[in-house]
Image 1: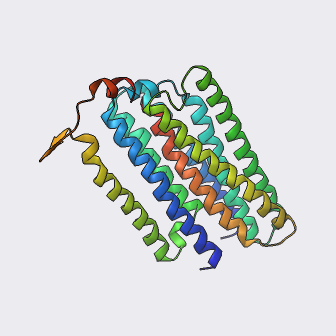
Image 2 (image 1 turned 120 degrees about the vertical axis):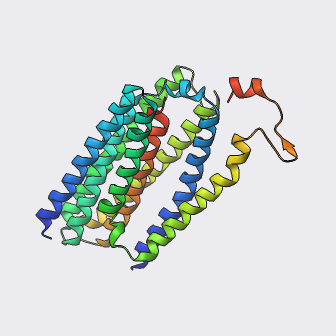
Image 3 (image 1 turned 90 degrees about the vertical axis):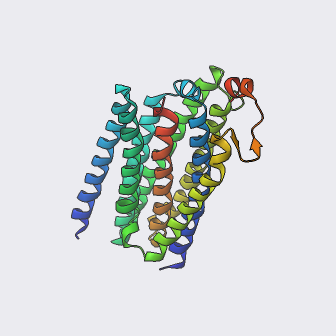
Length: 177
Length: 108
């Protein structure tokens, strides 16, 4: 296994502990506080569902970029990574509108335990989306010039992990009322 | 596998993931707890497995990658087990939680 690949898997493994611990704590508190179901009723399922669609689609673009890079087509890989970045920007825009509406309605990070978990978990996840999009921009720039094509797979592994985290955040924060 | 064939199979996986997303949103609208747990959380596990296997290609990585991932998941379970008693139980052998019902019902 290449060093870069090993490094990305280590990052993913450590991220599992970060997000896993946070979500495990959330589930524990959620199960012992029935009133949190009422707070969760104020989250926007359609916004969360649309963002899930966006992340799943951006993951498809990332894996197709990997496939293009493997066949030596750097230009195609760069275009597909560009689409993935667009997905990240759409995700963050929807999140910004969602948070604005929730904060204006009086649901802030200090309102209660549920909203504290909601903003912490979704905020840390959004930070990962921002970091992934920035790194992807550098990888796409190199891929366009036909350089460092192996990095397309590495950023793809990270991006799919970010997608998996959201797959679990969506039912926990939006669906379970 | 040719690039076109691989492309098609990735699109198929994506389409299945979207169908599962639809089910995970529609299921809880029935407001039956078992259906909600299965459609929301059961399907989340299936979706995560599909992304890990087909998009991250976890199944073709060296075996130790899966071991490292499993070790981290195990650590998460250890964390859960270590803290769950304190969260769920109100009392135990030689200990009892302070009675804070007002705080737990209004601010938590």
